[in-house]
Length: 634
Image 1 (cartoon, rainbow, N blue to C red):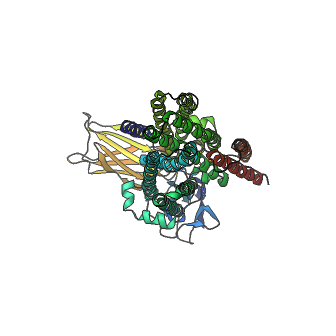
Image 2 (image 1 turned 90 degrees about the vertical axis):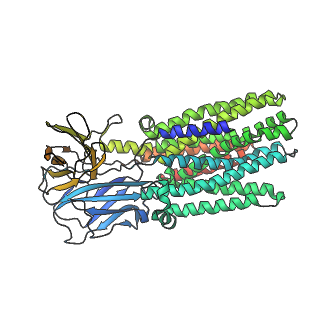
């Protein structure tokens, strides 16, 4: 077991190391004034529209002048009629002609992901300006994916083991007393409960770190931690989750042994409530038809938890069954038979709800192959397929071998289960990555908005200056209007870095408009590199950028650069069109109803069986999808 645990841990770390930084989720859809707009008079109001509703406590924007100073003339607020809008009323005669930057930050009330960006507009005379909207460019820490993956696995460990006990162990060994087996399962449930509490704390710290733009450890001392709990939708859902978690703990330690079955049902049902809170704060909650999307995601999580938790329970009780149940091979064969009954409907549920989620969040072959979200989904599918194959092997060959009393199949069964568990953990890692980043539809909309093809990289400004005593490199990224990173690299003729410059300053002025100059001082970072971030490039067009370098025991160096600054990329709406949504809802709804109805008839309408409960879930979600489809058609 230690070797398998070590392998699982290493597998998790290897996958997560490959995760890249990506954009966040609640993107700016449009603004008034538009980015790069030229106004004859100051606006009476600034209003921003986002693709998802915003958390009021953590969402705002400020107005800054050309030097980056915040103007304390008004405060932004969420529109009380539409949580996707932020606005600011501009008092009369408070701003004059010039270039202004709107710097905004939003935390989505749908899935909790933060975004930050900015755009500029001009009041007064300016020439040759284009109109465009800003897109977000926020990075997500890698530990985000790790925490989400662990959270999903603890769901499986608690809910899946309770389901295994109710739907597999009790009916398969109804006439057999196996206290050693039950003791092992209680230990597994207890570990799952404790792990779920730990991951609950980690999920809260993760949300606070996203809001405060800090690390998990940094979130512990951040005031954002209390604010998230007290003043956000996430805080309400998190507190509800922890209350259910505490109630599950009461059910676990309840001393009355005669109530064993009731306690297991309490654990399972309260666990379903925690799964709902998880789905209610996911990508699915940001969909246009949120109710069926959340319900489908919840059913997907339930099927995953029952399957993976059942595998973990199986591998934990193989040895106790060999010690306490005779004949052990036939007992395991009966367990496989009962587990197969709802494992098959788990697979059907995962496939149908997974297809709907893939349409909802990916939507195209391009999104599947060119976005990080789509590639994570491909990884999930790549790992899921051999899991199904191994499950089929256990269902057919292992089951037959154990029925015949062949003890050699017990060791094979344990090995196959170990491989299944490792692959399924890999599936959860892929899901953790997917839930940490923006959906493929949003990523493609951002690419289309920037005017970039899926295979086109950004082209930041880069230029070099060489003199008899110094080499200078200036990089400006991304090179469009708004916030940019300015990097200056200094070296001497021998290629040695120059780390001791006492002043590295940029003075910037556009050629197309008489809006004055702005300065930006760069700070030394490493070797001969000096960097700074600023929204100094506030207009599209050709700019004059003068770089001044002061070094000890050397003449000052002054270099002029002329970057061509592009307008900010225009954001596109990632929402699928109405016709697509109607087709997807009707097709998915009918498929779920058919699969659920067929499965329910095969269970002789016994609702307390695992397969019957999943069938009822399929029918319920299918009805929700058809109702949503009917509402769309009027």
